[in-house]
Image (tube, rainbow, N blue to C red):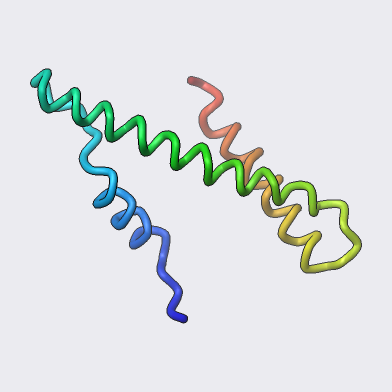
Length: 85
């Protein structure tokens, strides 16, 4: 199986959800708001999957522990990155 890079996956997701950047026309922006709402739901569900992996951080199996620790580190970094909001 070929591995897609993150940028390729983002392009696919954005193609599926549609434009989200505000345009300045109420009709267009209504659709873009709805697209953003879907994208937010997708992101929330993806973050929840990573959060679920944090519970592996205390496992003794090395591969499981590595996944859990990486998930915890990622979520801490994400929180720190956007704490100003």
